[in-house]
Length: 309
Image (cartoon, helix red, strand yellow):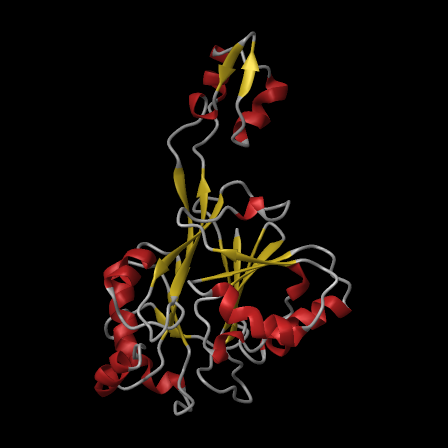
């Protein structure tokens, strides 16, 4: 199961009911924070989620409305007695761009690790104990005015355990659970791999967060078949399509078109311009293209579960 909480839906400046960009993901009791705009801590408190559980902060880019919540959060984690390392990752320029942020936050008693994002993706289990071995975070390039990337979090699911195959291979019952967890075992000098006793892998879960971006092929590929796609939708009017492209953003219709082409299950729109007073007014522009689109709100949450769980 993956729990997603949308903490901030504003672009450029926070509003009374909209913090700046932040999304909180929890899986097996461990968490990733995507972006950390101004107001993230207040939004988290309102939503009832604990940022102390954060193992990794994954930044989409380094514009202020996506990172200015970091100094305060880092200090709060200090005051609450954090001792575990905190990892921060992002696109090119991570060390240089975050140097002023870390200087502003000051000395911390816990380790802050600036982690260049690996091309092959990241297994959260390598950062902190408790993450499922099936969890993986990958990034894909997006088109903004600065280096930027979106993120894809997947939770794969092995095939069903087949007791008859385990018995035929002579695997003792007290070792079945090891194979179910993906571990190989040795029986009478022979190595038994999990795929020898498991059926075809079942459909897993996929969550995608776009960050700031114009519509682009990489976004379609990255969001492909996502169970939940949280996409920027800075502008509401269809007539603002060219303006959106010029600024490295999308309007509601462009975001919906990406969702439709990527065959996602659900689309949450976010990152609204401060000029948009009521996002629902523009929802028909998205819903006419992708009916399963909704306007994201601060505090909105969803639990993604395996099919036939």
